[in-house]
Image (cartoon, rainbow, N blue to C red; front, side, top):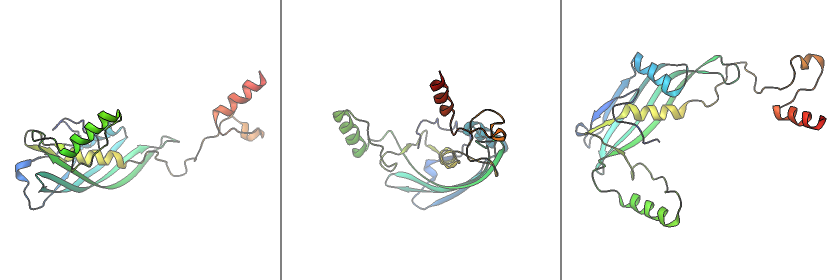
Length: 196
């Protein structure tokens, strides 16, 4: 999960005061406004977000805040073959940990970074419970957490009903004339090179 967002600057922000979260589970439901849905669509590079809501349970554990929930959304994307609008209803579970970065860095994180430096390799990505998101200004943004998981749940290649599975390359009208169609544009280049 990306860690480069600015607290409170999310397109769909729902900020919770960290001091309001205790050891007893606290469940919150929040919904994206019309403006937030428009901003989300721009961020996710899709046609529209028709609806978006999330339910999250927060609980303090091991000196950190554990967030676990579900995000629901109805989104409209462009078909990869025809550009026709494709509506998808999504339901994605999400989870995150938030901790105070002013406290000492965890032993596991420090050891991972040290070992990576010695071996000249990339540092291993740690579990969020070991390397949590920051609590900034005494607040956590669970809306941003839901947004990150929503972005990962989007279908990467949406297809409209009846859209072709693949394109065939060749001159227009080749199918009607009985000419052979090529499976990729590179086949056409190969034939062109051989003719020269």
